[in-house]
Image (cartoon, rainbow over all chains, first blue to last red):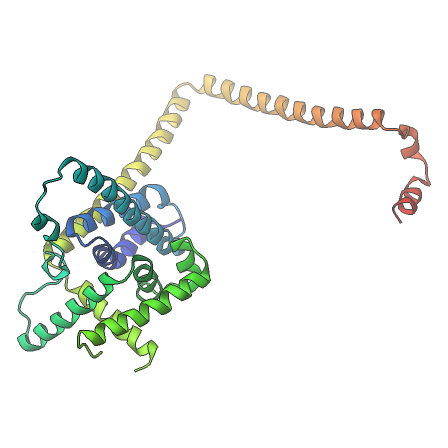
Length: 188
Length: 119
């Protein structure tokens, strides 16, 4: 059973990555924060007594389910909003589309080397934008497999699909990402 | 650049991005974590309080506590016995309704006859 200290350390280690993953999927700072906070709450409430080595898999599963649920709710909400307000302006739909415009996305405070920081921030924004543009399943597979460093079986468990599908999603994600970055003139 | 190097560069950039979150975002995440952990502590404390309350009650009403404990043990034993009786009666029914008379099972060559029949 994970102690309170172990839980705290685990959450402290994953919370930033979890937020970024949610932000890439949801494209909204507040929604991403909500999703991560709810996932942390759920983990502590329902699975806090599980051994600490099981926490990463459980947390990722909760997080991914929360992101999917958020999409579903947003879809239903959008349906009713569209139905009830047919004269809604087109400007509203485009607001907040850019990942760079999100308040929590990148810290743009001046650093020690402004030129280097600016270039690095630009590269980072382009990479994140390219990742955000990937199909959801490809992005999910890429982030879980390579950023969260899960093996194929664990990724398949979290995504609720076969190991073969994970391999396909990862392969396609890497190819698509590489093509997108080349198109945008980014050399890694 | 091969695939592994490309992936390493992308994840490195993602790590860098995660490390550069604005302080309000970092603070909001920390607050969320503390809230989640506080909820767990409260629940644990709630469970501990329930045990303390039960033990306190047992201390003040020791005679009643032992009586209830004895009753629970007795009920458990009766339940266990009833469960075993049910199994035994099922076996009796199977034996008595079988074409083979129960005395046949006591016969010395019953085992070898059954083996020969299976072959």
